[in-house]
Image 1 (cartoon, rainbow, N blue to C red):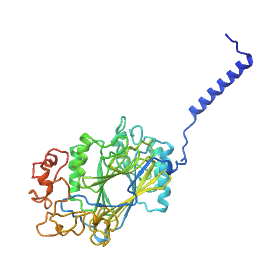
Image 2 (cartoon, rainbow, N blue to C red):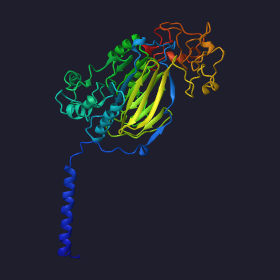
Image 3 (cartoon, helix red, strand yellow):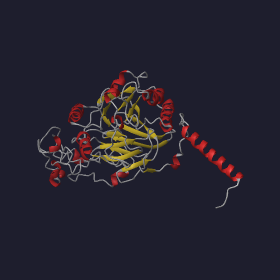
Image 4 (tube, rainbow, N blue to C red):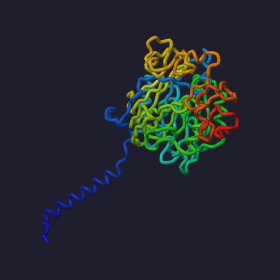
Length: 434
């Protein structure tokens, strides 16, 4: 066996000591408490096929009607939306700082939080130090009320959801707004429905149906933790949650804003409900998995800024440096002319490119993609045939089927247990409506 020289032994010992010191220093080094630069947007995995587009927004009720607010209540609502935040990591503070900076030059009146307020589990009492460190610290500088929902992590033991509700009365900044596990409020003529998607049950469903049955606002926005559709790690909701969301929201709300998947997403509408995912509030990002259900995806930290008046709703996605990623706009039927390639043939626009691909003449069928289809106003027209494959009623509350509704002739199975309450089915026939 070769012998090691004294000088080599000393050198080896010095290297071992240096390595041990480096390991100890690295292990004990505290995590940075201040925002660090975010990666360039160009380096972020992203899919973007809808930015700048204007889409038609119809809630999907059989008459296609909506009730505008009085002229005294037409002021535009400006608000933020974000979620999946409470890690205490630099990424959380970057997003918070970006929102503060953004709202210094843009109008912001309140914010929505889509859940997972804290990691790895929610607060057990109103004295939890994370309330100060991971909520009041980063978000009090916004100076805005933040309406919250509970995520699955906010329920993990030893979390106490009652403590989260009680803190609404104790928040020194008054920013924390969680009056109940689920609740509703109206701001600038927009109806908001805060859902507890981590604990869906019959009581919450009955409450939501009651609120939506009487809501008259032109925009109804639901927000909760779990998305119905997603092209990231968790994917689409399934099982009981999917059925519950469909029963409660389909053709009753305009937009669902959620988190849970740590990415930024615009999903295609499902049963009249447009969907945004804003789970980039600070927790570790998830991979994105593009499918035909999404039109914008970004593997990015960030937040939403939304604006809504009685006819138009616009969503702006921004990253954790406040840089724009995607804008998308929805218009209500009956709003100002929309003459671009937006999927609606507006008969008031002589050169609307959508009119070349839609059948808007007197052909015996009311095409709701055409704003001036004569069949939609002609006496005896099937005014309720506007949702493919769904049998609809002629007027709200009616029980008789529309004889001219193609969905009533070709898809009788819609009145079966398919997790969607079909309003055109005779009373008591569709089990999903019970």
